[in-house]
Structures are given as structure tokens and as C-alpha cells.
Length: 110
Length: 116
Image (cartoon, rainbow over all chains, first blue to last red; front, top):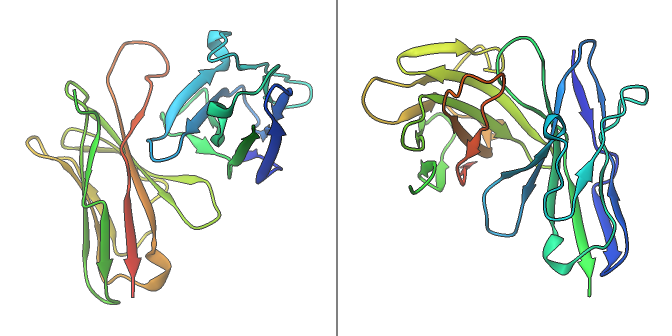
């Protein structure tokens, strides 16, 4: 069975400080990993996916298969980064349903 | 394009009543997914539908829950004889078909169901 774990429910950092949101997964195959974000009063939206190897809004995430992790990082946090962040995976085989972690609420303190 | 629409945004039902949640996918999308978020938990997959077909209902409770996506009109998630444990936020997502392995899912604002 697949599982996504986000160990931190809440995370607070000061503006300009580095931020790392942790995500670990378990799945016997080779999943595809995503980060979704939900800003206040907005819908859940895709932030980035590991297969794209891109940086969105200064965020990056590297898939570490050895540690089964997909941590989200940004070198300098901004106030507008305050939001709820969800790590998710999709099985490489099977349907397109996403498996989500429980989320981390990031607060960037001015 | 207004994006994925869900209604109602808030729904209050008494135990034993029926709840009907509607989802209109983005224009041009033919794939719909329903997720449920219980308090303090992440979103959990319930069902994946294409027009007139249920593709994967592995996350649906065996009883009282059903879903449809008719040829015309929105997708409907129906919960019969609701119980307090059904209180949750229900999210719908839709995707198109681009031919790639994963088609991005676009989420609606959710329906918050409260069972009294």
C-alpha cells in the first residue's frame, strides 16, 4: 500500500529564512510525486511535480529514492508563501488518483 | 473558464437524510475525481469517473455512497442516510486527456457537509 507522511502539521519561519517542508513516502513501485498548495481562500493547486524538475515561485523539490523523500525547499521565504502545503503521490501503474499527506501549514513571519 | 465548480459550498443535513453534491468540471475536461477530507486529515481519494463510466471506485465506502457522471450535466456524489461521520469537506477535481501519463487535476472549492 502507498502512504505519504508529512511529519510537521505547522511550520513557522521568518521572512528571508530558508524553509523546508518534509515529505516521506512509501510505495513498492516508482511513484510520481507532487506538491500541492492551498493559499487562504483559494483552491488547491499544483505547485510542482518531480518529473518536471522545475522551480516554481522559488520552490524546488528533489526526489530521493534512497530515503523515499520529496522535501520541498525554498532558500528565502516570503510572506506570500504562507499557505497549506500537501505532498502527494500517484502510482506509476493504475489509475490517476492522488494519495495525499495530511499537509503542513506554513506561516512566514514578517 | 470558471474552473471546476462545486455546489453547494455548504450543506447541512440531519442524520438519515440524503446529501447530493454536484461538480461541474472545467470546460473540455472529461475526467472527474472525488476526494474527501476529514478533520485533521489529508484528502482521500473516493472515486474516478469519465462520462457515463466509473473507472475506479476503490476509495468509496461500500454502502450509502454512490457517484455518477452522466453524458449531460454535472457529476453527482450522493450520500444516503447520512451519519455524523460523513461530516467532511468533499472536493472534486477534473482533468483532460493530453496523452501523457499524468493529466493535471484541477480542484474545485469543495463542499463542506455538516451532519447534525
